[in-house]
Length: 121
Image (cartoon, rainbow, N blue to C red):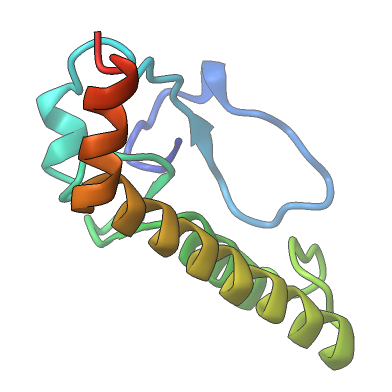
């Protein structure tokens, strides 16, 4: 989780390739999600990027794109348009797989499958 609202420079990572200040805050989401994260990310996930002025971004791809746009000399994503497009295709396909899995999990046939094989206990 990337946060930039902490003025304490003791925890600041020094990286010659990065031209903006950042702090890394480790959050263990297996426990109850802290309220301060929910205040920044509606579903309580990470990463979260918070600017000094209080503006907040979340979701991995959005944060990576913002970091690339804000600091183009040290990119997180490919600069080559073709490679970037291929990565976008991969992410699009992965979203389809995840969507299909969610549909399967909540479909009637999946519930029947769980009952039949007692996998829900």
